[in-house]
Amino acid sequence: MAKPTWEIFMSVFAAVVVFIVPIVLYLMEKAGVSLVWIFVLGWISIAVASEYLVVNIPWIWDDANFLMRIWRLCFVSAIALLIVGYFAIKIWPHPMSVKENNELYKSEEHKEGKAPEVKAPEVKAPEKPAESTEKWASTAHTNSNPNGLSFTEVSPSKLGIEVPDTFLIAFGTNTAKVARETLKKQLPFEQILSMKFPGTMPLSIYFNKRGEMKVDATIFDERGNIAAKIKHGEFAVVHPGWDRNWDATGFEIVDAQNRPFFYIERPEPNTIRLLGIFRMSDGSLISINNDSFRYIPKVRVASTPVVPAVPTFTYPSHGNLHKRATP
Image (cartoon, rainbow, N blue to C red):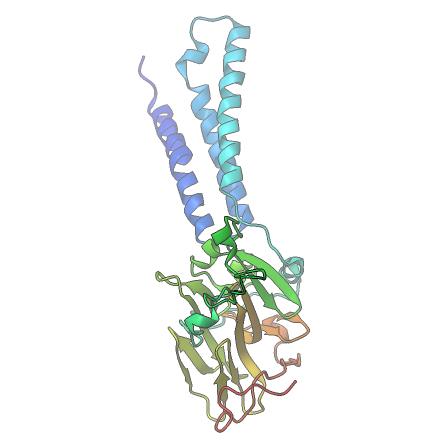
């Protein structure tokens, strides 16, 4: 006896949900989407669809008494749900690493307002010379005295020791460890740290195809106008009166009052330090100074004073290029 059209349609629809939705969720997870409710809804729909397909397996209902049919149904259902649960664990958004951001996001002060969307322009800090990024120098000292001891400093990998390829990112008084694979995804800065805000931060730290660390960012003045850009190691300060300075490990942009609006430093191969004032795509601000990491909602930007970081370099840069300020 032929199945009704609606049963055929539901079976096809359930099969599409079971096989297509996991692929969509996988791509979302790889893209850094951290909206948990989407994943919850997606996996619940997959579980329901898989159970519908199980119930429609003819073998479960054919040639058996009532108890045997119930046993078959429970057995196959358990296998299907275990498979769904396994993949749900594998394909799930990363948890937030900074709890305060959850509280800020849930705060009733966050009003929805449409500010002009600002896509993070690709901005690059000057490259650190290759010799500065190598922690283990090939010219390490070796004692050649035949009557003494001889030691040569080498990298851990040369001795067969595997060191996790992770980076320590310091922002204000907060720190986070990020895997190199995460940095290869070219995600906005807040997604790298698994943070969640109404807007997007115009900053991205990543590795290019040649394995070089790059930084894309857009720096805005207090009125929301673009003041500077950095892209692929090339930068431009377009705001009159603003200045910039850098050396082998750090790069900084300051306003007319020498307040750092952007500073990034890579003092060690696996360490990144970030300071500055960043305007989000929704008009809110993130302020990172030497003592704090602060999120300011758009509705409070005009009334909230921002404490800038302490300048790292000496200004004006003319005559003081590559010169750091005396501590």
